[in-house]
Length: 144
Image (cartoon, rainbow, N blue to C red):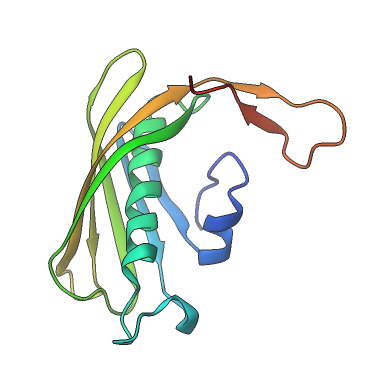
């Protein structure tokens, strides 16, 4: 059974990511690309892989303080080989300050081969309740 991300993330729901690990600065997400998520070579599109790594790093950063949100400040990705079949994203918090998280993520295919690697910097942001008729129960503060 997969874990909850803690907030609604429509794009993540659309792609079908599941959160399998969320603790102690580590995360693991699972993803199986649907046909509309493939590129012209019929492998998982690089944008979908980058999104998987982005969310994997963000959840690793949040795992040490789940009440906080994070926003991506910077991300660098390298693609080593095509990402085929069910994928596993593994994330790790490398270093943290009061306001920033420095992270990495790796994507593995079903045979355990490393397909891509990313590093990212995230800013921690507080979440506040939203009033009125808003769809989402929580909203991040300004990231300025």
